[in-house]
Length: 251
Image 1: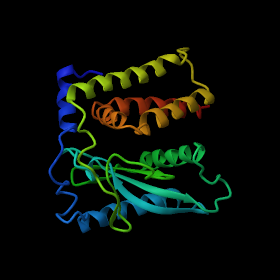
Image 2: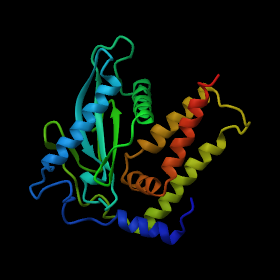
Image 3: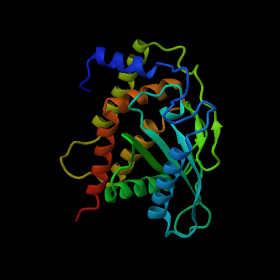
Image 4: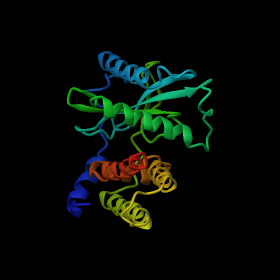
C-alpha cells in the first residue's frame, strides 16, 4: 500500500461522487445501453464462451450481464466495463451441478477465465478495459445495477443513495481495516520458502474468492473493495494466489 492518506481520501471522494445520470458513454437518456456497445460486448462474451466451454458437453450460457461501476451512478472516467457470463451446468458428466455452498464449479470457471486470458489478449473497447468473467451465477444481490445484455433490460436498477451515510474519511478507515485483514491472512501462512501444498493453495483461493472478490454483502465492503481495486492491492493479491497455485503443477 504505497498511497498516502491524502491520496486515498481523493480516491474515496471520487468513488463517492454520485453522478446525476448514468454514464453517457454506456447508456442513452432512456436508460438503454447503446446498441453498438451492446453488440460488441455480446460478441466478445460469446467468443469467450465458445473458446472456454464450447466443446464441453452440458455447459451452457445462461445470461450475459453488465454490472459494476459502469452500471451505476458511481462510475469514473477510467471505470472498467464489468461483464459476467452466466454458465449453467445442465448435464455435464464431469462436473457437479452448482449448489449454493459449492466452490468447485466456481473455481473451475475461474481457472477457465484465467486460462483464456493467458492465451488471448485482454479485451478493450475504445480505451476502456473489458473485465469479463465466467460465473455460475451473477445477481443474488448487487450494490450496482445489473443489465442483461441478452434481454436488453435492467434486471436490477442502479441506486443513487447507497453511499449516503459515508464520508471519504470513514471509507478510508474501513479500507485500512480490510487491508489489515488481508495482510493478516497472508502472514498467517507458513514462510518456508518452498512451494505451498495443494491444500494451502485451496485455502488461498477460497479466501481470495469469498473474503476479497465476493465479500460485498454490505455497502462498506463493496466500497472498500473499489479502493482495494483502484490501488492495485487486488491485482497484487490475485497474482500471488494464482502464481502459487501454478507452482503446484510444476514437476
